[in-house]
Image (cartoon, rainbow, N blue to C red):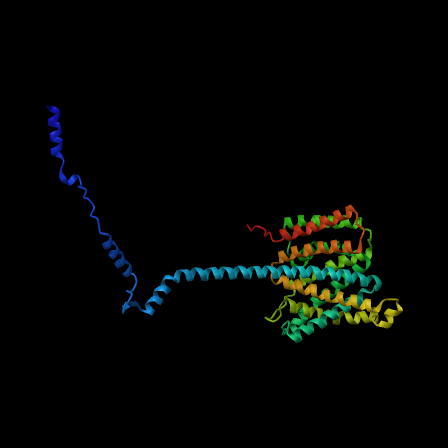
Length: 393
């Protein structure tokens, strides 16, 4: 009895508003749903006009263009990405080709130049001939329009003159070294260039190296010393000529910072190199005439027992490669950072040393190879740590 009373009171206490009544969903006929969907579709687009039971042509074109707008945007983006990837690939291939030409011209120059110096031990005359061929090439490219002829003032020529002087001396000392010792040994000594660059920058520019740079110079100096002690073709004239070449070439880099050359828009690195080449020829030609006289005539060469045709051919190839590899080097420098160019130069030196040893069958001892390897590894390390900037307090 009590149980029934409790249930009855609980039932009466529940109000209709507290319990929502669920209504049975009203089913919409399929035809009505289709009509509603059509109305919602037409609300976002203009109604299609029907004339005589056919859609108007302009209406069809408009509807097709609206429906394909998104696909067109995706296609345009895809074409832009493909074009960008193709351009990047072409730049990479172009840069790789320039590096290949740089190494190839350098190899041919060292081989043919060494062959000429073996039979014609007159490095002053040979260097002058190389500058002469380079000057003729530069003037020819300016005349034809391959390279834009620069507009240069007298003050700029005065500023460039010291660069031309050290450029002349650097190439002359290099040829003197190549005429006395093996090509591989000359390039091993020339691996000392970073050492003289740091030394001269500290003395004349006040740019003191970081600890990492100093540490990277240690394997360079040690490797060159080890290679020199075990070099079979060692010669003091060849050794000091290569060292003098390092000093003069690095002096050129220091002078280019010390003596600021105001470049006009038309005076890029290649034009600057061409001007230096022409000036170097005019600087060295009188010295050559005074020291060697005229020793490139067929009469003199025949009297010296040389094959005139072979001498002229090898000298011309060496001179062309001499100018070409330096010009390509400047082209690469305009496309990459100095650090990348320095690493490429280190690899180039390795390639030249290996090819010259194989071509001339230069005897190389294991200790000599080790010294050369240590020196080149130091050059590579130097090129990497050079870009590390010291932390400022």
